[in-house]
Image 1 (cartoon, rainbow, N blue to C red):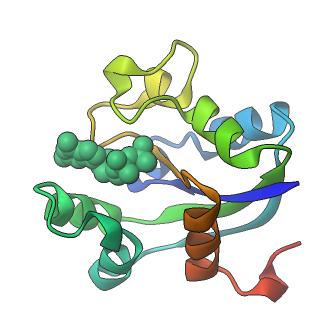
Image 2: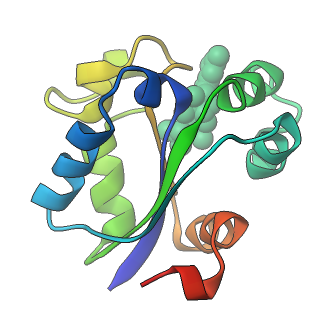
Image 3: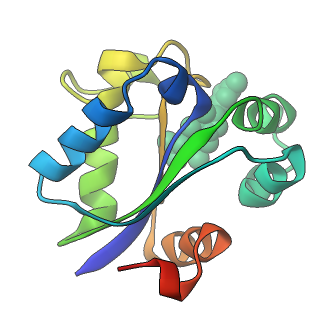
Length: 137
Ligand code: GDP
C-alpha cells in the first residue's frame, strides 16, 4: 500500500469536474484516504512548490495555485504514486496519453488540472503539508 497527494487545481475546480476526476481515481482502484477543499494563500502555494523556486514559471504557477479553491486528497492503493501519475498524464497536455485527465481537460502546460506527487519522499512531504495524521483514514 502506498499513499500519494493529489490536488485538483483551481482550473479543475472551476470546470466543475471534481466528481469526474474522483471517479477516475476510484475506478482505477485508488481509495480516498483524506480530502478537503481549501483556498491556498500565495505563501502556502510558494511553500508547496518550493522545489521550483527560481524557475521562470514559479511566480505564475504559485499565483495560479492561489487564485481559487482546490481539492486536496490523499490517495491510497498499490503503486498509488505511479498509478496517479498515469491517470493524470504528462505535465504537458500535448504529450499526455489519450484518455488521461490532462489530455482530456488541460488547456496549457500550466493549466493542467491536477497535481500528483512524483516520488515517495515528495509524497510524504506533500501529504504532511496539508494533512495531520489523524485526518487520514
Ligand atoms: P508535474 O509534476 O507534472 O505537475 O510537473 P512539474 O513538477 O514539472 O511542474 C509543476 C507544475 O508547474 C506543472 O504541473 C504546471 O502546472 C507548471 N509548469 C511546469 N512546467 C511549466 C512551464 O514550462 N510553464 C508554465 N507556465 N508552467 C509550468
